[in-house]
Structure formats: C-alpha cells, structure tokens
Amino acid sequence: METNSLQILRSWKEEQSGWIGISDSSIAMTACLMREYHCEPNLAIRGIATEWKTISPIEKQSHWGSAPQFVNDDTLFLPGSPWKLFKPDGEVIHTDADPKGGELIGASLGQRFVIPFFKLVGRLEALDIGGRGELKSLLVYDAPFHERSYKLEVKGAAIRSISDKSVAQLALSPDGAKLAVLYEESVYLFPLPPPPASQFPGR
Image (cartoon, rainbow, N blue to C red; front, side, top):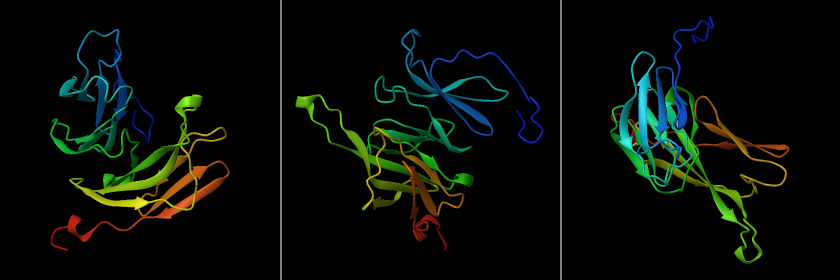
C-alpha cells in the first residue's frame, strides 16, 4: 500500500514458508524453515513486481525462527549464530558471532543500527531454573557496516529481556544518537557516540 493515500499498489497470494521482512522496495523471507516444506532453508528476496530469488542458503538450525530485517533498501540483516549482513544480490557485507542471535535496533535513514547483548544470568540446571537475559552491552554499527563502530558496556541498571513482570523494549532515535529502553515502569536513555571519523573517508 502507498502510505499517504493508503491505495493498494499491488496484491497477490503468497505461500509463506518462513519469516518475513519488509522494506520500502523489497520483501525478504527465510524460506523453507517450516518442516512441512520439503526444501532446503534459504534466504530469498523479491521486489513488488518481481519473483522470489534465492540469494543464500541458511544453516538448518542457526537461523531457525528468525525473521530477516532490512537496515535500509540495500542492506539485509539475518539474525542467528553467526548473524550476517547481506546485499540484495547475496553478497555478505559482514558477519559476527558475538552476540549469539541478536535483535537489530535500527535508526532512520539506514545509517546506524544497534544490537543489544543480553547475558544469561541466574541459570541453575540442577534446579531446572532457566535463568534470564540481562542487558550487558550494546554493539553499534555505522554505514557502510563493514566493521563494528563501538562495543559499549551497560552498567548500573538491571535491564532484563525476560522477567516475571516485563520484557525490555528498545528504540533508537531517528538520528542514531540515543537509545531508549522501556523496562517495567522506567525509561532509560543512553547517549551513543557519533560515528567514528574512519567511517567517513576524506573527513
């Protein structure tokens, strides 16, 4: 649909065999993840007026249940261990096994994203206690995303991904300068450093 007029641009029937990610111009799917589909798991992409194109195979377990996310129209994030950044043609821009899994928090204009790392704490296998994730660090990436810009340690606040009362919700400001975290009845605001000078050759 066109957002200003809410007019339908195109519609079709789709057989969904995995998880979907959507940008302004493309749709990505981690296809063949569901066991009833007898095909090899893969990452596929299509435009509004084009057909599906497989751009990369997917390891059977490392991305199970993970939805692809667009950083911008030219960059696709696939969670997992390791997580990967793709170009629409399947070229791998970057891959990183730290942290395992990963949830991408993106900024507008597709120039920055942050991956929060929740460390498992409180797990006691002998008592069958599964533990909980506690926010320990923030991994910051800036365009063109070939390397990590910062790894920032989170101290002082016990923010958990899962608890009896609440699940932490995170959002990046439009300019990528601040990260807000809503947890239980509090909002935490973390200032983020500007992109490194090395990210902008000639400056």
